[in-house]
Amino acid sequence: MNEQVIQWGRSYTDASIAALVGDGRVHSRVYTDPAIFELEMERIFSSAWIYVGHESEVSKAGDYQMRSIGRTPVLMVRGIDQSVRVLINRCRHRGAQVCETESGNTKFFQCWYHGWTYDSTGALVSVTGKEGYGDRLNMKEMGLSQAPRTGSYRGFVFASLATDGESLETFLGNAGPIIDLLVDASPTGEIYADGGANKTEYLGNWKLVGMDGYHPHFVHASVFAAMHRNPEAGIGATHREDPFEDTARTRTLDFGHGHAMLDFRKHRINHYEPHAQFLKKTKGGAEYIEAMHKAYGGERARLLLSLGGDPHLGIFPNLQLIGNQIRIITPLACGLTQVTMTAVRLGGVSDEINAMRLRQHESFYGPAGSGSPDDAEIFERVQRGMAAEVNPWVEISRGMDREQTDADGNTVGLISDEVPQRGMMRYWSELMTASRVPQRSLA
Image (tube, rainbow, N blue to C red; front, top):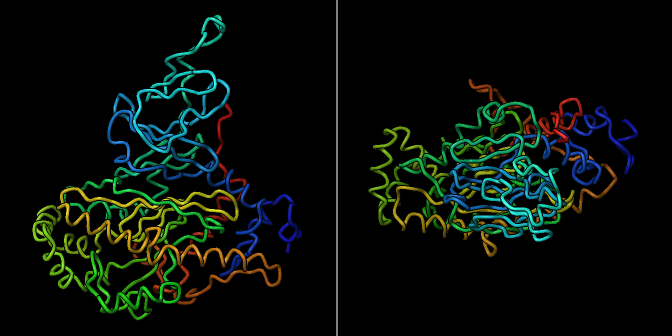
């Protein structure tokens, strides 16, 4: 093996990066080496399409959300012109952040250092002591910088710090219509990311999060026991047939570009009738079912209702749509990750249905939930274990010999197969090759 793979603190070549991802295995250094993390910040998070937020989070002029793209602090803002922009949270004068509050509404962002002031479109509207610059300062050219490229799919806002590269549509590929399974869970095609958010941090690498159908019986054993005692415990809860058994109708899908899905569609639709009966017991449930059939037709409505807005989709590198939530993964260091989980409210349904969705989210993914704390704990144990330098390879070969390709070109495996992990690491390896890095402007 190339010596540069083995030695800590050395620079990596394209060949040595490629050597870190083998045939059904990954070198632990991918998760533990700070030098690899630095390259990820440049070649993935500063170059690829990164999810920033949902348009419903900035519904009124002046609304903003403070987010990050890799190490770059950004603001998703709805301007006074009603356009949603991704602005760099950095004063054009001496570089201080112009906003330090996670979210809110404002007409102006004022730098605390020297008082330069910008409006909600990012335009520079006031400079203290402007006469001191003479004719050297062109205020029209000194507004807050914008992400070089932004795009939106069904209200999901993405941005890229690269000045060129593939379109958002091409990047999403076959994963795009899977996002529709969440948005179209509303009979009006409207979702709102205003159900509250909770954050967690764990001492582990960002690539450990989610899209694993192999772990639930072990990491969440007590949760599964409770679910089997009450198989109709909420939206999409149909556990008469265990969805995480390889004999079930569930599958893993690799869409390319690192996007993956735990596909519950055939499993959930098989349990539509008991689920519909459960819905009808909730205030507004019968009306919801009727509205969905009217909006989408019988077959599509049955699928959407049975899924309950849970596509169980991962969009590389930092977005996951799981359960009733939009999840943002933010790498802070090679061994430190922040996860933000925002509950989703559906448009066109009763308050009681949305309240039930929120309670379900809290019960599994909340700070005192039955699921997320388990995941954070196991990620930390994995990170500690991967520090070992003896036999440092991580195995991701499960199901390699039985995966197939469907009619749309997606790779398909059984629910416990490590199809998502292989797809993610395949695309990771492509992006981490220097020749593929899009150009970024130094202007």
